[in-house]
Length: 323
Image (cartoon, rainbow, N blue to C red; front, side, top):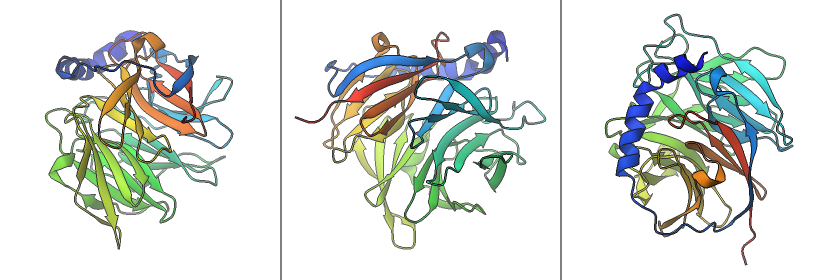
C-alpha cells in the first residue's frame, strides 16, 4: 500500500479525529507521574500500512500487534525486530464497504496461555468480518462471524470463563463468544456504548468481575458487571472527559488505568476516583496512540500515526514502583 493510498483511505479518520482534537479538554497536570525510561523502541513502515492498532504481550516480552491498514498481525521482539505472523485475506471489494472508515482493518488482539492468538477483522463483508484465530503452523481461520455493517474493535479475554468479549464501535454492542468460537451473543447494547457520530465502544478489558469498556466519542471509561450466567449488568461511568480515548490497561494498583487518547496524542493515568493526568505526550514520541499494555513493570504503547502521518511506532517505558 502506497503512502498516497493510505492518505486517501484514512480521510474519514482525519476529519473525525480533527474534530475530537478540537473538543478535547486541556489537561492541567503534565507530570510524567509513574513512568520512567521512556523511549521509542521500534519504528514501523507507514508506506506499508503498518499502523499499529492493538497489542497483546506474550510471556517472553514479544509484542503481538495488529497493523490496521495492512490487515496483518506481527510479532515485535524485545530487541525491536518485527516479523509478520499473518496477513488476513483482502475482501473482494477492497474493503470500501467497511462502515465509517471505508477500508478493511485488523483491530483487537489477545492471546491465551497456550500461545493461540485471537484477532478481530472488519471488512464490511459478511464472508470475512469477525473473530479470527491464529495458531502456530496454521493459516488464520475465522471462528465467529460478526455483522458486516458493524466495526468489531476491542477484544478482551476472561481466562477463567474462557469467554471473549468484543466491542462494536458502530453498532454500540458488546458481543461475547467462547474461545472455541461459534455464534456470538449480543451481551450488552446499553446506550452508554453508542457512538456520537463517529465511533463508540472501543477498548475492552476484563477485571474484578466486570468488563471495562471505553467509548471514544463520549470520552468515557465504563465498568459493566459480569453477572451470573454471563449476563451484563448496568454500565457505570468510572471516568469521563477523556475525548478520543482508545484502548487501555490496568497498572495493578487497584483500578488505576493507563489509557491512550488518540487525537489528543497523549497517554493518561486515570485514578480510581476518575481524575486523570497526562503521563506521555508528543514530546515522548507519541503519534496518535491507540493502545497500552503492561507486562510486569514494562509498559508498551502503540502509535498508529493516523493523523500525524509521520512515524507509527512502539514506545516502551518502565512503571515506577509505588513509594
